[in-house]
Length: 632
Image (cartoon, rainbow, N blue to C red):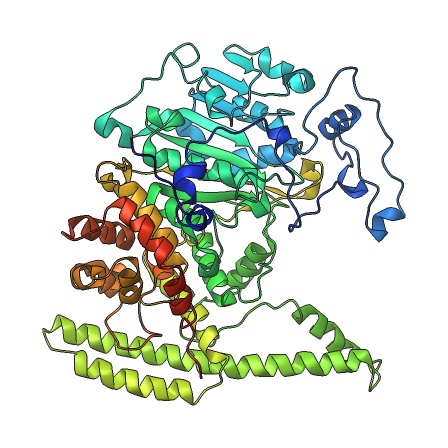
């Protein structure tokens, strides 16, 4: 096979997964380099190395986990946990996080157990079981015919896993389950005598007789190549194995239950369109669902986020689904959003479909503003002080946002009316190009009369509105059938927040499976194109397609029916740069149809020509990216 030398820049972005990540063999986890600054501290603090249940105390007694000298001011006043003497000769990866709360595991099983029933009596592959609390609870419920524990630190955790090992069908394999050469040693008839490698259409069928669970949580996080987290890399390869039918997915479509730290799943399961990148789109293409079973569910830290009414609306719909299914959240496991929306629903509040009222955002300064206003109301706030100046500043920000959001909803409602009118004209067989141009001119005048900051606010709001209005919504998070359970730091040792992700594969478009570069290479092609297009995610699709290859838009756009149909998440053509469909707005079906049309195009370039084109287009890409937000 021809060896292609990829440009360095492409290895960092669009083509990164082609050569650097898809089939790489990972080194031993404990030898991977620690990363630099992140949302998590790079060392364990005293307050994190605290045992709050018997299993956590057993782990602490091994002496593997020791706090750093640094700590917070609050924790500095507390006595550091007593240092335990490690068992002689026992070592292990001290960055690993363990589920130690039996209550959390019991709550999860009682909450989603009905959905796990179909796996009862299955073969269970368990990667990095560690202390084994989750493994034991899952074994209790599923009663698997075989339970394969892959644990590289077997000497350290064998005492924890011994109750499981005493059960029939359970075996401990002292190897790393995320090193694919070692995982392959258990994907054999010796360990899985009931599983058969599938071919043809059978690969697209669910295999409920095999279940995979893994614990990828670590603190501090570990880097690998261009991934800032080892867990993100493993997630990427787990999802890609669905496309390629490799690893355990060669036995059919196998469900995965994966533990990881909360900030390792932001790209896999984004909360809004700004974070919807290649990883999230891949799950939409390859997975029936990606669900968060339990999580910290803290407020989104990003400045823009999305209209809070969208989060409330989705939560209200989810609660209705739960009530229809007879699901109830275990006491004490309610998230803040669930509690807020459920109480409002019990009082008769109806949460309207987003798009009819001005957006509102939960800002970090809102709580400080309330505190200062309460201080002012009590008469304790003095004039000409730092506090009074901060109060004035926050009030100005609030008023400025209100004016901007009023303009945003006015522009959005006008666009909705235009879409409806143009769609009706198109359905009646009338030419709507003149009406579209007239609207674009009027709409541009409305933009020009507004605030300059309205442009970016409108783009963010409108794009989020577009993906949440579809049936089903584009984001997996917005399709959820139940609210995640709230976790506590005390559920884990060390005390670092983790979440449990449930991934169910689905049948995928056959074109995505064609990854042989010497043949059609459709799978590699769409991945390369997707990475390039998402770097200009705010541009119109006709311009982005022509930046991929000249003439592509002329062939694809007129034939791309799902991009023009409102019912399929498309948009009527309006000659205005703020009214076009953009790469980050495309749903899974639109990506699929675009690939189908690309492969039909008689003048499409070869894969190697695409790579060369993207390297040459570096300057052009920077040029069009600067025009994503027009000047006022």
